[in-house]
Image (cartoon, rainbow, N blue to C red; front, top):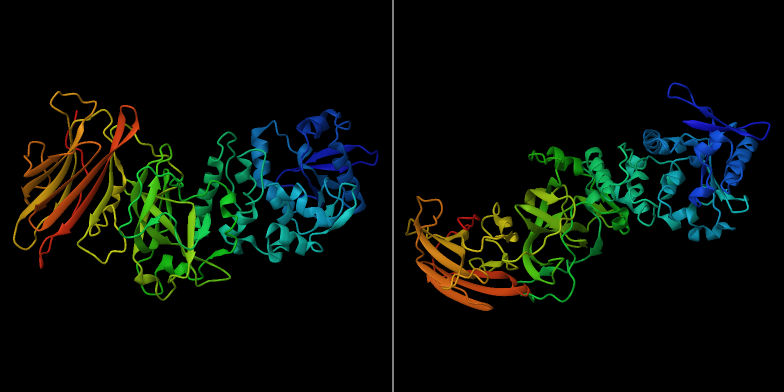
Length: 580
């Protein structure tokens, strides 16, 4: 760490202190940067030519005030760091919080206000870096544009709290470890930085995290910060409690509700579990982990199997959460105003509103394909039964894989969307699901798009739809294929459905199997109904044009039992059987 010294001759000199050398008492400056060429740099100090710059006035003020307060040394970020050295800059940013915390006094120079009542409109209060400069030092003095004292952090405590949302305890030195992740993020929600990466780097000290700086990575820096937070605070689920707070997810579909294919109202895309910036936490400052979160991860209270901590694997996060209920949701592709039904769940976060601890906090998680889930921007907070230490074991605990960040999905020519698969065996279901309700380990396969690429012909999708467990050892497979018309032109292939009867000794149909029932769907909309054994099958196919000569097909499948007292087994699988 380099410190400035105000010499008796009115000149400034730099002294470098290494780790083994105890630091003398020093003052430190907090301010807002002016234009880059106006600030005095480390090179200017070394060459002795910074006195003509506008920023030199702040350095002189800090030195003179430090001398009046009895300190020989002081620190100013513009000229005490050699920013031409990436290694030194990285070390300085990772050490910044401790440098401010260890200072004897911090002088805050606010150059755009005269009275303390104007603090709310000052630029200083909106800068990302000044958050740690406000919280870390034990003694903070505020000066206006005329270098007059406005007050201290203690005397202006109520004003600062009302503007920043930071509770007085944390302004006065309370351990930041006791503040939830969401609370600390909310402090930074309204702050900005010149460089995108600094949104994350300015919070390193607040979360007591060290990580390398990679300028140029953009918003990935904030994702890296959150990944480090997960490692350091794995049981604080308030990290996921961000977004627009609602009582009910506006994307959920009611039972039997159908959606318009050409969805005219924009629907938010599927997002990752982690936020893009602290702005997402602007309404999340009151969320804290439940006080029994340790029991959930240890299993001590009821001798349950302990939940595993979140694990980051590539671009996904695997974690265990209690599940409130299943539901169907409306999803809209970003590059097309095309709506689709997607299955999902409400996953309950083990955190609560500290002022209303009985409210349930949950996030809607929609299927993304390949057993992966994504979330919307909405955070559902309502009066439904919330998990407690006494009842959390009654909720199913699911180990789920959720995308860490937003992954754009697009529609391509020839795609087939399994838009809705409704199982009418259980009429008590609250909503229609695009999966078979009885096979939870496979249900997410039906939220993906079956993409064929250039292979417009061949059987590519099959599912075991039912089997009569009482009287037969047979099973029936429903297959979807692409077929061409008689003239063999593949530019407009039709969708073909077949039902194949197999002995249960065979695991799946083969390409050469001949369907027991089959139908070729005609564009632009066609419906086919048939019955096999105990089950009635209804399939509706709708072709949607993306552009001239480009299309995709939406498939709605309804399965229902025929007759009483019949136990039919439903199962599904997903595979590509052929195609060229």
